[in-house]
Length: 92
Length: 388
Image (cartoon, rainbow over all chains, first blue to last red; front, top):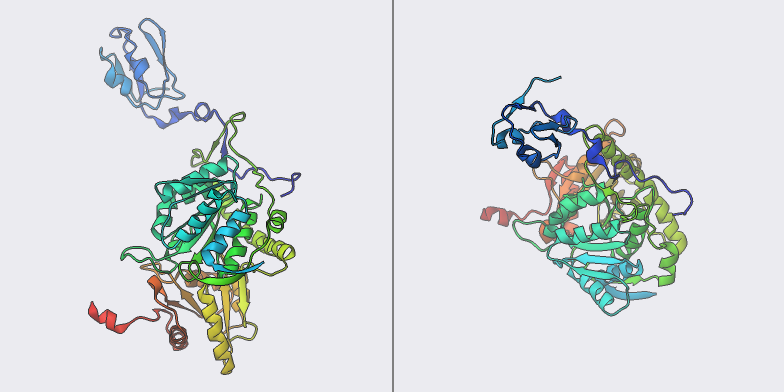
């Protein structure tokens, strides 16, 4: 094969890095976590157990989920020792 | 240089002349002599390659996959159960568009256990995206391996090629072959120059996840490229003729077909038997011909249709059966002919598990097809059936 006119790699063979950022898995879910701040103790269990790593600790007793990537799996709600998280199907 | 050697040795020497960087295989009858010879060639220092011993054919194929994505030319050989164990990796190699050559030694598939020849194993992997070439004799095996790398590594193809050779009939018999020199092969087949390979300085993934929004298009391109590879098979055949001074064939090879009223189609070593049978019938004044299907994948539908369009009947000899369907090549040929040429295609399954295909077997398939049977097993032994 000549060194000059080579084809592009065939469609779909090469995947460039960064796909997990581009692939917004939040569209997969039907539920979202909702915190009851009156019960939250700020223990960080939800942040550490989230399989997507999309729960962020903002300040003591204050968390947010990145809904671009939250699949609504409910692990945070199930693990919360204070039962401060409920899974809601109602959201914007 | 002409020499009298075993078919397996001819393949091993041809592969060594292609200078693979990595060889990985798991020994299994009747492929064993090929990889034994290659391991000896490497151990003797005659070929600068990594010979990777593995614990299974799945690993052998995986080692080859890894070697090719790292930019190497690789080789393996397998048969039967080993080939089926490779299947998952074979799909990945084709899907990742990796040039690779594997010798698919043809052997029956268990159960019942049989080490003897038919073509059930390679026919079972026909949908993987691999090109498949079927060899009639040792010389063709040798030539096909040289061609296979050139086809596989062509930018227009970038698909793996399986060279299929009948177990024992070709692997364990001695024939006179014309073995090219290293200089000739080097001129015909330059060093592998990968279009892409894994590189820590430019990291990316090969064969990564693709969602429903794009997967079908990727498979479409694979299908289109595999179909188009037929032209590269032909082109490489012409290049081969220029380089080595002999015609080694492209997708099909007609024999006595010009005025033939009945054409027999076969793949692999049985074609020699069919040609001999046709010569005998021709001597008796019957207009019969033989069509060798040399390149089964991609399926040369147009070439086959054109080649049989003047015949009154086609009979396909199948050394495999799609259980619950029937003959695989016959079914594809009927589909290719549909709406274009109205020639009846009969299908005779024969030669399973090492059953000899004799002149009598060919007589039987011819007579039964001429009498109107369309799908049948030829060469069945009534006394064995009665045991059941």
